[in-house]
Image 1: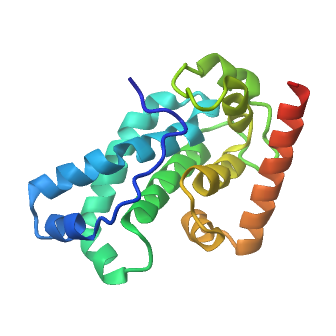
Image 2: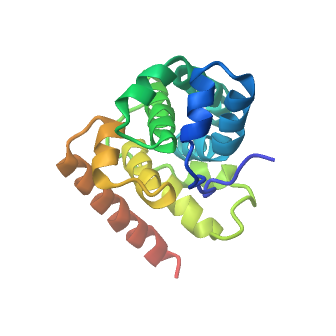
Length: 191
């Protein structure tokens, strides 16, 4: 079964496993994948589902972990972000880049007419969050949805979101404000 869109990331410290992975210990690699795969799948699915590109989630998840493991020595020396933050940043950028490459699709913050497409792809895998909320989140454009999911699902700070999405802090605040306004609008219509 695919992980829920709203699966939370583990909060435990990964430093010992990351250090072991840098030393080349295969068990550490496997443990890091097991610990973070739900969060990576959730973020990728969350960004891609409204575009109808969920078939790419598994491939992009693999690519996320491959890129992360190749770059682990740089992550360790950098030390600016938690491993989970760094990993979700890689996943988010891969998903957004994939959407940008899709020919013939507008990629802007005003693309919000995806709710009907997303509603058809929803599963019963979000037991704590109603289908209406999940459909409303899926109605957000990819840039708004990515910022919203990083903040609300994964608990990123505004500065971390700015780094992950490679945008200014003001852009993050604007995207989150617009995402919340859109969700209020969509969810208000359902009551």
